[in-house]
Length: 271
Image (tube, rainbow, N blue to C red):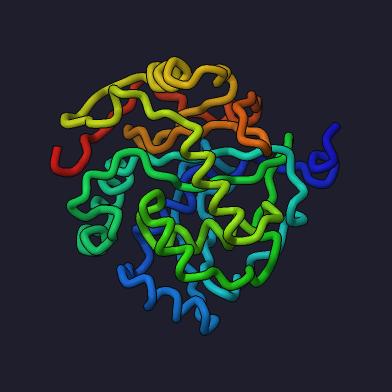
């Protein structure tokens, strides 16, 4: 059994928490302003909801910033077995956010006029059973230049900060190395052509989405990809990758996949 598996046994990492939380955060579109708050040690606590399908508790606390509040470190940096690359279908995220709070969603940089489709939610270290998170509390201060550089893949400063604090520190890599790994992981995955320019709402089955990704990515096994949904909308595609970013299977991911027969994919904004 891998060393990381012996160190921790828990459930699969919450699937929707990080991104859904962003619609509840007072949005700051200026990277420098967010960085100043982060550097000064400011932190806030918000509560977000995600379906019971993706975790044992219906409500989870989300803390961001130099302090993690009541969050406790769970895991040792660098001790894990593989990664999960999480790709969020941005139109679904923004539709969900607009239903909860239209004004706040309108201020979210991810939900502006740019027609985002699949964006990077995160790259999560995992154990064969369970997952580490918040491996350093407080997390090392994140460079605002890195935040700025990542906005093409992760289009909200708050998302970049949160992913570093919660997941990135568990990689055991430096900030530069971790976000370089995020970029390489995203480059290793080809988005199926049918989802690159979606101009009208589409209804699909989770299996159709998985099959399309498998066809577009030779070597991606059927048990190495999973589709998540938020209500009736497709929310995320999660892909298992080894530490060297090759595709691999991961049984625990499949156990937490969307159970709906069909899901809706809203079109890209401007579509």
